[in-house]
Amino acid sequence: MADLQAGVGAIAVAIEQVYKDPQLIAEQDSELVGLIADNGRAEPVSAHTYRITFQDAVPAEEAAVNLDNASVNFPAPGSSDWQAGTMTPVARALPIGWTKLAELAGKPDLTVVNIVAKQMADIIRESAKRCDIHLCAGDGTGFIGNITAVDGVNNILTFNDLDFGARLITKGQHFDVYNGLNFVVTCLAKAVTKNGPTQTVAVDTVAGIAGGYIARVSGLTSGSPYYVEGIPYWVSNTPSGLTAGIDRSVPANNYILANGQNASGSEMTPPLLRLPFDQIKAILGMKAVKSGKFRLQWGPAQAAMYEQLAGQFLQITKADGKLGTWDLLGEPNESTVGGNKPLENIHANNSAVSYLMMDRWNKIQYGNLPSPWWFTWDGRRVFPQIGTNGMPTAGAVSYLVDTRQFFVDNCPSQASLYSLALPPGY
Image 1 (cartoon, rainbow, N blue to C red):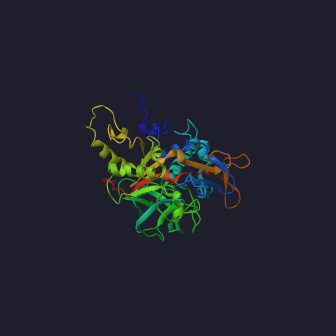
Image 2: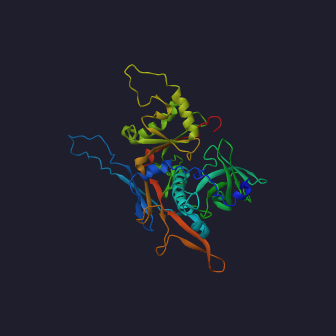
Image 3: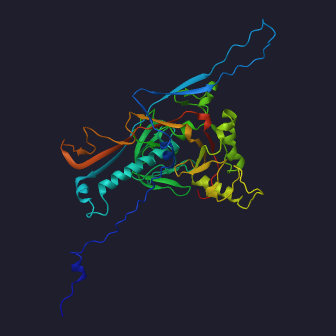
């Protein structure tokens, strides 16, 4: 009887079987940035500041006159009032690196994915996600989270779930921690917990960090961090600070304030949802809130509250079979608010609804090269890494650069409903 090949020996010549469809276990959503990307092209600018012009008044003089008395003067004419603010693009880079062996071995038929091509595709999607994050949370200072507690034994930071939690931080990302506007330490996110009301980030160090400190994008200037200006920057009714260099505390500058309503911890209700629209009407008129002009952005928590609200009206019918624009009818995910579609975004403020008239959002960038773009030098996109002895190493790196900055040219056309209650578990 012939000897049978033993299984142990066969392993030496067998081709290893592997799962050829590795799944990405990380989110790369970019809901809001896609809407603004579709809203026209970016204005190319030079190294000089970009000037935004606002018209906050029209000729408005009015007085009674006597058409039969030649000695009575007619009133002096009024005029429009024009104001200007300034801003600049902001440059940010997303690096991607690999070794020569990864390039040689990471080819089709040798690995389950083309390593270099996959990395480059991933970083493009990641850049869109990061831009979306900064639009949702961008206060102009690189903010990505509020730290509420520090576990010094296990090197764990807890983040405030009432706004953004740890949802804006990605595993493997370095971020800076600030005490106010002053830099404290750089941390590496080793693990991120984003589910539920306890949002944490395990980091490599918690040295010098305390509750109340702020997580920001790395590489900013301590004392005066400047970064992407998103919803918190432009859609704010806070009468303090500067927007585009304009002092918000000056009453005559109220044209730079958006509308807003503090829900003070209340749950979402139809009157509360309507109120920001009515605030816009009071300033810009009825046509400003024409049905369908807005996207109402909220996170999953407020989407859940709205579905509960809409579900209460599912059995209501009308004799004429028609639905009014304020009826919360039909399936919750098909319902509208005043005829305007909701936009659910996991990067949104957990306790807020942002009323965004997308036509009034714009962007600028350095030069004519569409952002984001691959950094090149002398025609090269891939750069060898140099060792400490001045010689090349087996490493290579590429950089995806984005210089877009965003602005709203009519702040009173925007609004927010904030400090809403969260449903249990969120």
